[in-house]
Length: 103
Image (cartoon, rainbow, N blue to C red):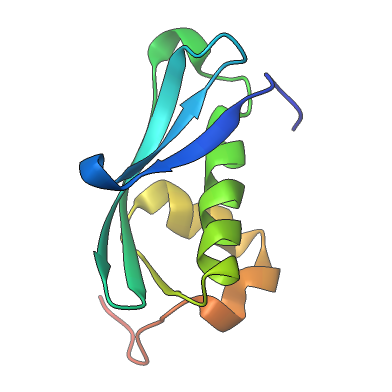
């Protein structure tokens, strides 16, 4: 889904990627924890006034592209990122998965 045009920037001091409008207004973010080359995406949030405009999907794509470009392994703890990855199997090679079924 195409939506609002945003830019996504890594803000390491806040341990998050931020999505901003062309005017610089913060629309949402993805938080993470980084250990070596392993990045754990913990939470995705889009502010209510920006929901339904494709921002979360753009954030997910941006953070996954960033991880791939930096040679990182992704642990998708965030439910949104985990669900998004089901529809984007091209990222599977960089995603850490459990080998046992968790019930």
